[in-house]
Each structure stands twice: as structure tokens, then as C-alpha cells.
Image: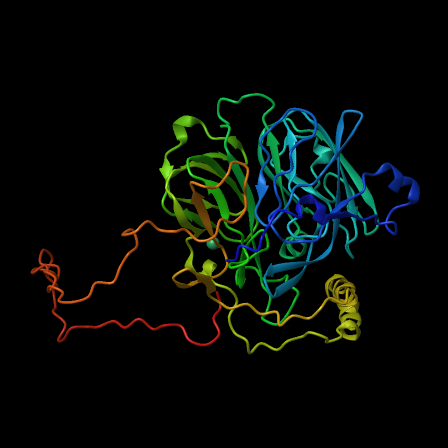
Length: 470
Ligand SMILES: [Cu+2]
């Protein structure tokens, strides 16, 4: 965790790029230039320049997609493409995503907005985009083959609908889903209410991120897409601790965090030091009668949860998935590395048997090789992160909520480590320590065993050794 993140670059880090090769010039002239993001840092909220004002969200290690107004329609341009995502400093993955990153940019609109989203496909295979949770015409739902023709490589499709329901949504492909989601294709969608809403609170800070998982052998760059459960990288917005930015808030801020799960397992998300209320799901705001205090909420597969709390305790509060294997990174550095291996000849032979194979291993890989990216060591420790008191020994789905009196409204910069008031840190006790009192009758006095074992049985916990699967 370093404080090297800054927001000075802001949206200046986004550059416009025109994908001239994929659509005709006439068609391109009608499209908004796609904004491309080049950094994995948390970008400042994108304040709306027109329309109803709202407090925009902050995407953890992500950004919000700019739009243009065209005759009363909000127009966005998503480009589905291979990307290089820095998952943690020194560790880059070859993923698929949108507009330069995985996940794609957050789309933020207001209830009642008419939206048009252009989707240009620069992947080596067809795709589609499903707008998870939205009310929309059936033909805009984005299920390839069922509600639309798939978007072939090089083609651009437009989706158009009215954002009818305020709330927390996500988007992802509904075409070769297993591959495309395993490769990192997904994004967040927020629809703000058009007026004060009885069940949607106004908050000071509103953070969003997606839970995703990858299976990338140490030293390799590309996820194994066939993996069903044995993922080795558990990420938030395709970042792993210590690569996940902290969530920096001002003391007494009302904070909302929205989370969507596009992994293959559930994640009990746990916040230290505060209680929160789950105020909504992808189905909408939760009725007030159904809210109760929690410190952990389970986000099941394909679900979204939004929760809110008053950040009234100063400090550096751990915030993580409570499955301990999900706060670890890949282990085992004895796996053969395949960097520089040319699969293309083999791929062609396999393609004769399995046509889909070509997509991943020939065209997919070859494109990536041609990018001529620098080659980092590309490993990341299993448990790491240097805190103010030593190693945090975490990985994966772990971050810190930093609550500070001095944090200015609207300032999302990392304030550094918490300075604990004197006498408020756990301390070592030295000198004579009294013998702790022991309970005398331990050992199940109420239900004696039928047969007493001849001698006491001791159970030993065996610690895992060698390369771990988790
Ligand atoms: Cu988890």
C-alpha cells in the first residue's frame, strides 16, 4: 500500500483513440470517439456537466466513461478489446476488457435518461453486452443468438433504451460467456434516481467495484479459461492486494459501497470497526423493514449488494473477503512458464478438431504477443503488503477503509497510515504474568462416553506445504 496514487492526472490520463480498422469511416463519423484508459489507478468521480446533478461514484482502481449528448440521448462508446491489466505493481495480465482496462469503465446515468451505447468489437471472436438487472426492450438485453445477432469482430452495434429503474447494475458479455468473463470482460452501471428517493440515501462517498477471479500460473500472462472453481487470483476490479487502492473517507461521512460478483463462488465481504446496512441489491433498494446491522455480507454469484455505514471511527480499517483463501495470491513458482512459446502451429492442428481453440490460443495469444509489452518478472507474493507495523500477510480480495478527520470533502487521496493516539495500540506485556485461572470441569461431564478411550487422543493440525491449490 503506497500513497503513490494521485488524482492529478485525472481524466487527462484518458486518451481518445479511433478504431479506424473496425468500422467504415462513415459509420465512425457518427460514433462518439471512444475514451481509452491507460492507468489502473482509481480515477476521481466524473462530475456531470449537464442534466440533473448527482454525487458520482468512485470506481476502485477504475474510472467512469465520459459520454456525449446527441439530441437528448446520452451516447457512450464501449470498445471490447484485448488489454494489459496491471493486477498489482510488477504483475501484468493479458486480459480482455473494454476501452483499455478490465473491468470496463463504469457507466453512470440518471433515471429516465435515454441512453445509446455503441459497442465496437476488437476481440478475435464475437461478443455481445448484457445489461444485468435493467428494465429494457427484450431486443436490447444482449443475449447473443437469443435476442440479437452476435457482434462479430470488427463490427459495431448500438444498444438503446431508457434507464427506467434507479439502482446498481453491471454489464458483461452474453456470448462465449465463460471465456469472456474468465478473461475479465465486465463493468459497472449506476442509475441515479431522478429525484429524492425514499429508499435511496444521499451519501458523501459512493464506491463501486466488481468481484472477479482469474487462474493465471505464476510467470504466465493469460488466464486459463476452462477453470471452474480452482482460481488462484481473487480480485476486486481485476486488482489484487497490495494492488487494490484504499477507500479514503472523511470522519462522519456517510459511505456507500456497491459490489457485484462475477466470480464462480460467493464472497462474504467483511468491514472492520463499523456496522453497515445492506440498502440494495441488483433488484433495487431494500425495504427499510428488511435492513439490519451487519459487519459481513455475502455476495453470491451473479449478485450485487450495496451497503451503507457512517464512518465515525478514525483509523485504517481492514476490508476484505472473509474466505481466507481469497485473501491470498497464487503460490508455486515451479510451474513451467510459457512466455515466448509459439503455440500457433499446434493451435492450427487442434483447430481442425476443435474450431473454438483457435480463438484463444492462436489469434488471441498472437495478438497479445504482437503488442510487444515489456516483460516484468510477473509474479506476486502469496501474502504480502507492508503495513506500518510489519507485513500485513494478505493478498487477493483485501483493502483498507481509511477514515480521517483531516480528509477534505471530495478528496480521495490516500492520507497515509493512521497515527494512533497514544495508548490506543495493542501492546506487549512484560514482567511476571499471573497463571490464568482454568475451568475445572472441562471434558463433557454431562454426557459421559459409553467407552472411555484407553488414552487421550490428540489431534494435530497439519499445515499445508508445497504448491497450494486454492
Ligand atoms: Cu471471497
